[in-house]
Structures are given as structure tokens and as C-alpha cells.
Length: 375
Image (cartoon, rainbow, N blue to C red; front, side):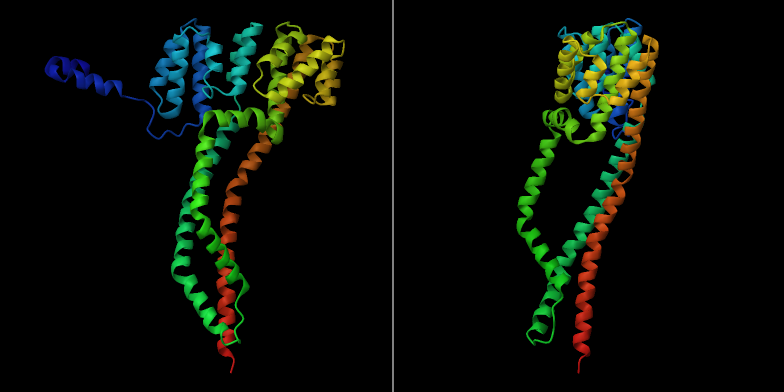
């Protein structure tokens, strides 16, 4: 295309440059999840490290093939690399360009000198659970949005045309003192009236909550300071990642106390940092490292006993990795089971609303027929 414009239509050279500069391989509405995009960056960084290439150029080219928020994150990463920051510092100062677990692993590997093996482990040990959960969450969100929109339209139609007529009939027949108004219909009318009165407030609160959760700092705070304490699957998954990092350090021949100090300094979860500091202090005072980790609930007592029974470093590393894989697999199964319940719960909630409306109308019509059938 460039040669054609240069030869036959030289006046369109700027247009040619504009078209080519806006060309993207990725689609406007990509089906890639956040995990897919982060994996592509991880592979790019691993290739740059293994081939001794400049990661700035590769990340800049990768950013040109993305759109939206992730493209802006990659561009911020490129700017920080251009400013002279090291790769791991730039990653830590660019939230969500990689997952917290991956950034911690790269930081820890940089301190231990095990970047080659860490990159290989992160790429080879890919867990598809994140992808499946994110896809399921996206599908459930689309499903709930479409069905919810139709439900809102139906409720508005009921409020506008049907329910006022039923309430008027109920009031007229109640004046005769022979008609007993249906309780579900009255409760339905009261609920709809309350929602109507507070609808502007509900709409504003929902919009503000949505904007708040979209802020990167808020999501990062919830993910790092809150999620690990209240969601058991996240806490167990982070413990499994911690075991893998400890296994990396032991395999590299690094003292466990030094590894605990590094992890206590750089770990993104505030609660785990405090536990690692407690464990390290106890180890420095002469306690057994695995017992200290078990006391602060980073590993179980059974895992601590099993690790201590291993004689050689190779056996100990193998045991630690098996525990990490077992915990991760268990967490993955639990996450997928919970994810599979999301859409049925949406259907049940919408079904309950439909059942409530239908029951209220059916009972009202039943009472109306009984009243009219009386002599």
C-alpha cells in the first residue's frame, strides 16, 4: 500500500501513514479476558529476558496491538521504562498490567537470581480457571443485563396499566365490605411504591458505587487488603503461590530466613506481610521455620510436619510444590463450582419476582371471582 501511494498518488502519503498507524490486529470488541492479555505480556517479557532484548520496544509494540484500558496500562509501563526504571519497579508502579502474583514472583526471582526458572514456571503452570471464571462472569453479566432490562420493562408496564386498575377494583369492592383484598397484591403495590419513591436515590447510589469500583486504587485496596481476609479461596490461593516462591528459593540454595524477609518486604497482601514478619522474627529467635509458618496459618500443621520429614532439599522442594499444586487445584475446583452457580441464581431471583407478581394477581382474581359468584 505504501509503494502504491508513493508511486501513483504521492499526495495521499499522509493518509496512507494515518491509515497504517491506526491498524490493529486486535478486534474492536475482543473476546480476550484480562488473564489472556496479561499472559501475552508475560510471554513477551520472558522472550525479552531469554533473548537479551530491550523490553521497552517489545512492550511498546504490544501496546499498539491492544485497545482500551489495557493499552493505556501498557503505555504507562513503556513510559516508566523510558524514565530509566528497572522492569520490576516499572511493573510494580503500573497496577493491573500484570497480576499481583506474577509481579511478586518476578520481584522475588530478581532478588534470588532465578528469573529463567520463574518465567518458565509461570508460563508452563498456567491455570485456565481464571479464564473460565472471567468468561462465565462476562456471560452472566450480559445475561443478567438483558433479562433485567426486559424485567424492568415488564414491571413498568404492570405499574402503569395493570396494577392501578386492580387496586381501583379492590378499593371499589372493599367499600361494599364483602370483598377481602389480597395481601400479596397490597404488599406488591407497597413495594413498587417504595421503589418508585426512592428510585432516583437508588439510581444515584448505584452509579456512584459503579464508579467507585471502577477506580483502580479502590479495586487494588479491596483486592490486597480485604479480599484475602474475607474470601477463603483467595487466601488459600495466595498461600499456594507463597509455597511455590519458597520452593523456588530453596531450589536456588537461598536461606529460608532471607526468603521470608524478602517476601515480607514485597508481598502485596498486607495480612500475609504481617504473618511473614512474625514468622521471620520467630525463626531468628531459634524457632523452626515450618512450625513458625504453621503458627501464623500460612501453611497447615500437617503440611509443616510433612515438609520437616523430608531429608534432602530436592525432596523438600518436591513436597512443597505438590502441596502448592494440590491447594491450587482445590481452590480452582471450588471457584468453578461457585462460578457455575452464578447464572442459576440470577434465574432464580428473576423467577422469584415473576412468581411473586403472578401469585399476587392470581390471588386477587381468585378473590374477585369468589366475590362475584356470591348470590
